[in-house]
Length: 323
Image (cartoon, rainbow, N blue to C red):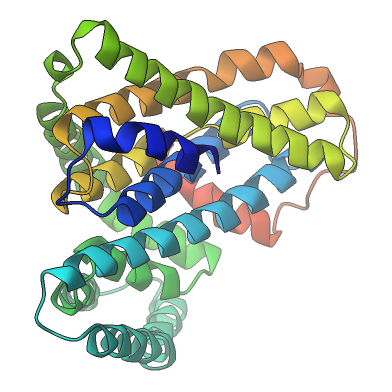
């Protein structure tokens, strides 16, 4: 809501007629609503809060929040690309639905064979790993061809992969080295090259940047805190949840790069949003320690069992960042 009101003010100043206001406002709302799930999991693990009531609620909220944000982003990408594509929108939407059904009810069954083979042999052959990579690339190519960004295809492929903990750890061990040591630094370098702080010059531009940071923080931290407090959480715990939900990190940078690719935001606004992502991520740990000390956060229901679905979901993400 706050992002939509901010868009009314920023649209005539940082955008132009080539971008529809609806697309601009929706993108701003989606970008400001994202929570960095892996970073959040890492913070909770380091502070031994993953099994606490706050940690459980934060992880659940972040998962729902990110799914919603990605759905909105997918809609924005289709909306913008369909305006420049001669293919009717209903054909694009129908193709996307057909692709999703094939992936969920067809490819997903094929992927369960991987778990069976892994249980029998204790490992996967190089040919099977190569086929897994090929499926990821083909899925990304399909979504790009259908008019969505290629990121959504690879994301869907990861989402339908079997989630057995040992299997997930094995696959991460095979791919995380090249991902963390090569692809991730390249992505950050690419984002850095696209970020031009020189475009944010003058008192007026820095005022816009400050407004973006303020609205993003108030909307996410304040909104999450208010909602959790109204739901019955103590004030300090609600403040802790709002602070955790305000973490954006890598996921925000991914969304911003997509927005720049489809030209829904300008390079100047992209740079401001990157500054916002960095600021809100860096503030999480000190603000959390200030508003909600560890001893208060650990008070509450018993810890989650070691083999619970929450730990199974979160642990691979934490391990990936720790690498």
